[in-house]
Image (cartoon, rainbow, N blue to C red; front, side):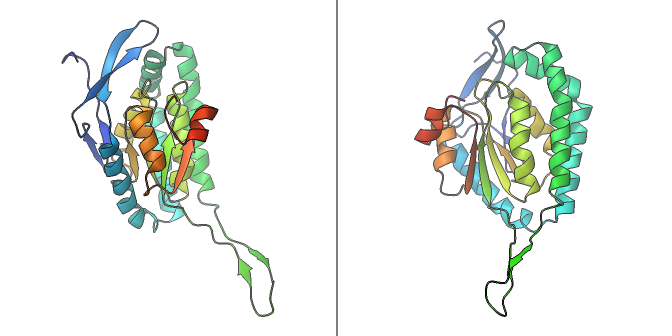
Length: 242
């Protein structure tokens, strides 16, 4: 890869890192074919590191209060709003969509984060009935653990927020794979979020569906998967082609 190309890094355990094997891939502007950046070509080793970082972080994140998580999500919404024009320009260039379209997405992205920040404070249990004399049945809602997330190429930042927001609000930790074609706004979001969330709560791993996406889906340390992709990908348990 041309050393003059802007090289981004993955975000794992609160740090920006290269791929374990040092491999890189080019990111293109599809409207022009221009190489606009380089990102790490992640591997199964990178997925493993991110998942176990998320598991360690979950032990602490689980105990945070809804109010604490809400404040952090609002802080992320604030910083995305402050950088809305920058993010729109990155999205337009990386996805190849009109700048006006990319600009129009940012208010919805910010609003979604604010929605989940508020919704996270309303999670509660409730009494559901007396099924036996002397016993009260109740529902207690708890986070599941580490959520693996695979986002598509066409609305990279919006779909990342739709996945990250509710998972973090509910007390889960995240390992997120953006599309290998359009990872740039997600990586920029990770940069902006780096000082907001504790290390390991949000992790972003770049690379192909095989091995990164499939590695997330099949990893024994992942408790739930959110995948936006085609039917064949979902049926096969493979996270490529998004």
